[in-house]
Amino acid sequence: MKIISLCLLALTAASAIAQPLPIENVRIALTHPAQETAERRNVVFAPDMEPTLAFDLYRPAGAVAGARLPVIIFLSGTDRARNWKWFEDLGQLAAAHGFAAVVPDKRYPRGWDGLLSGTADTKRVLRYLAEHSAELGIDPQRLCVWSFSGGGRLNAAALAADVPRAACLLNFYGLLDLTDELASVADETRRNELLAQYSPSHVYAALGADAPPWLVIRAGRDGAVINRSIDRLVASALAANAPLTLINSPEAVHGFDGQQHNDESRRLIAAALEFARVHLTAQRTD
Image: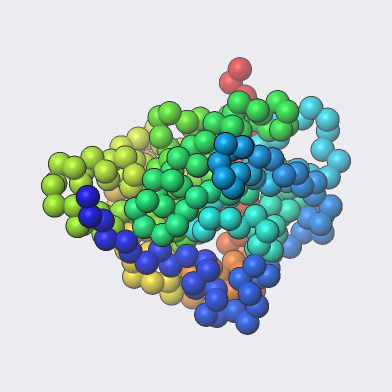
């Protein structure tokens, strides 16, 4: 099957142009006085891979022993962003706000093969978090997936029926609809099957009112491919009466949380953290 690989406009490409710093050293716009004290632990979740896959787990400093914390998992648009200052900042910031935070590795090269391996690895880390929740000190019933850029494609994995269902979703400037990416599949039946399985907008709309709440932040000055995919998600979610919230920031660029250190970027990051807080404060059902 031939698939056209679209430019994902991942953080690497966008930031490398606009930032004098190497992408690994870019810091995000919002800080918290307590974030540097967050505990950080390296956890291998796929020891059978070569190289192994792991995630960094951040917890608030001084968290009560045995506490089951709500957790945010950060999905970047690249393979291994755990040591980027960008994602270190996000993990520490979430911990400073009382969450556990997970920044995982994944096999995520560009193109269709990357989507398949990234989907498999995202599902694997979600299952690992649920199966090892007691030792990690997290509550798998209060989990939020926060994706960025090309990492947005992996939201279909987080919404799949064979993984623990996220309580909420967050996305910044993400690729959230695969209609363009799958346009080259000539067989309409097969194309629709792939969209129903892998395209976040299609999977989300199929859940309708039962879908988890989702906050999407659209960068008004982002590229056409990304914003067209967001627009399609919005249209399909509204048609399905799904609980989607959209914030459009007219002057924001792709990667605004690291590229634009201004009040608007800080407001948007804070809004995402508050959305997670509101939707992860529900009591456990067991």
